[in-house]
Image 1 (cartoon, rainbow, N blue to C red):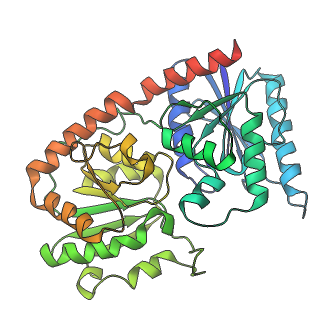
Image 2: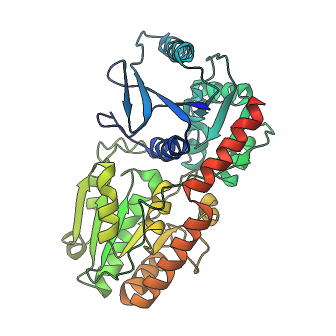
Length: 379
């Protein structure tokens, strides 16, 4: 089978940027290629038009057309024509597209189109308590209705999407997954007392809550370290150009001395940072189903994460991780302190987290589920 993917993010060597959607598609693409299928990924919003093969995947980069008032239409038609051109070279059996921005709203192809929910702009604006642009909601709803098949990475995202767009689509739930051989468990406990956060440095990820947790942790464990990894972004609510600068102002004098911000790091290096951490924190307010949580759990790291919406589809609270609302600073801090002071608890949660990922989030299992869904549409 030849499967095509449309995305604005994908982790190739010269990638402009990489988001969670790109990582998820890369994990699935790698497994599909390993199973003997052909994969082409059409990455729009790039610096130039190009075509190359990387890791057995055909990558076609597309530069957006920028003409005021017509960019949205012309770019979609350029994506359409690029896919149709590739289809003539090597027949594409099915194309998968994300819900973000409704990129497939005016794209017409000669094969079935699957939409997989990773979280639309409408969805994230709702979770982030912000108004959505009407044009984005228009495209996202049109693309949803137009798609031949519907997948979602979490039931929560599917339910909220149906509610927001006043539709009643039957979404098949296939979560994000990872290569469990690449992200494998390290059973050694870490004495460094290192707390790791990796992801976007942006309000919706709950990063402005992290200083409040860490200030309390430092009072009990003065040698605790906090490592922050991710792209620093502007804050839409305040207009501040740097969310990290906003975070810095919230740390106590003692806490800020033990904070290290590494900025963006290559995706290939994330694994070693997880390996060096004692535990990971993810106090997010807005996700669909975060790959970062799965990566940390696969490596046997205890996770303290947000208890919002999708969270219970990943973590069973108190069994393979801890779930706390990001606004409950003392409770969040207490869970971190418990873990830092108890190596036995670290190991127990880590082993159970790894087992959960092997059973539920291994890409070798999820790729087969995706293939069955693709075949049902083609047939």
